[in-house]
Length: 172
Image 1 (cartoon, rainbow, N blue to C red):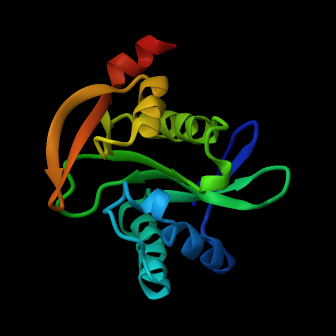
Image 2: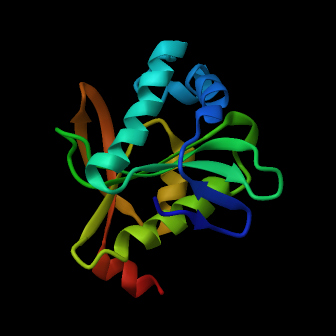
Image 3: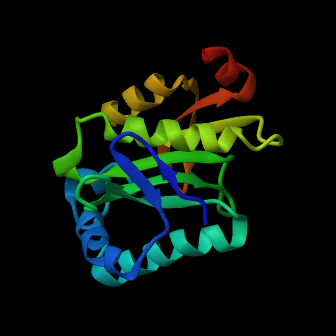
């Protein structure tokens, strides 16, 4: 599995010891209100983490576990997904509450976006965002994504931000 490194972060393969902090993240109402609306119990958190790991195996890409470079602390997940029924190749990010508002989501997502567009066949990337999630909209805009449309994904009203490879290359 590919590993990415930024100034402050390491985006890496999932490990079994990521489960406890991931279960806490999935149980955080402040975070989960924008990710389906419901907190996950421990069992569902485990299943979700296993899905993220399996996505790499099946698709060759997925969400990385994110850790702080200086401490090794797990702080969230960032990466790309395109499960069955998804509207397109999506870049997403979820950072633990106590590490938000530090630019970490933008930093990690920028590295993941660069990685995504290194694929010569990838022509666009989207981010699916809850309409009330102002912070994620700001991250998307910092990355160069723009509002494309409203949609319904898994029964939830969302907004889709996106960027084409051409627009991404013109940002540089």
